[in-house]
Length: 405
Figure: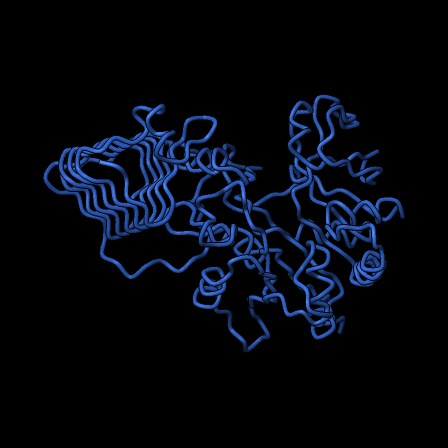
């Protein structure tokens, strides 16, 4: 009987998420709520589990309490067949220091690899919104014999300054360029480039040797994309996986190939707006490839006194009492009172909207209280003096904030 190849999943979830402040003022970036019920980390974990990979270590560091709690209470796998999802904090196994980079995080956690003894290691980031079947990427990696396979998504060449760019002569990666201004286009389409998705598949022996070399390099910042992958590219053992080739069961023509890096407040807001159209750009209702989480134990949403919600997602426990909601994502246990008007906004759990208040193009974190008659997103000049406002004009209130009357 042929032994099944062992695959270990490692999720890099130590990101500080400075560009998402104030949403990351009290939590790690992968723990930021998304889409009403979820947290960002639920997307990568759902992809791995749906793909059949159920031995997963989540490396955490920055303000990790809420992330650790979410993983341990939500992602409980059956231990009968050795399945687990476990958070792994920085352990200082190699001395009194925290992780200095994503590659160093794995290097300091190699006991996980030695314990599991996998043939292949899937290393994915924790803060992107997308669906992907990782089995198809692993299958290409095994068939190609590469040391590392890097997932790339096709984006217009003029967006190259936003990404790490993969230069390729076909399947083989010839260079790994960090946010270049004038990169070469793809061999089959000069108007496009491969942007790195931050998802990698390694042959275990290759990863162990690369980590050892990187750890001994005093000039390295010990980053996966900045140091480890370029090293393996120079060795000629790196290949690209075209995300466009990935086929997820149940995907629609509209949301197939969707991937959103929600690293900024504007991209985080835009990703929410992708959810609420009649034919969503990203469809959360795909039952063949579900995004898993632990929903709150709350009663259904209730609409009373003429309360109305249009083209919106409304969570459990929400009460819309005489208020109007349009084009919004409303998380569980939100209360909107009589005469309030909320449009194009993201409201997280336990937000309270007072009577006759107006909220437009806003992100309100957990527990925000908007007093009666308050206006948010109506006068951006005034809002900039009171709140955090993004370049595109999205008003953001942090956790537990109280809006000005």
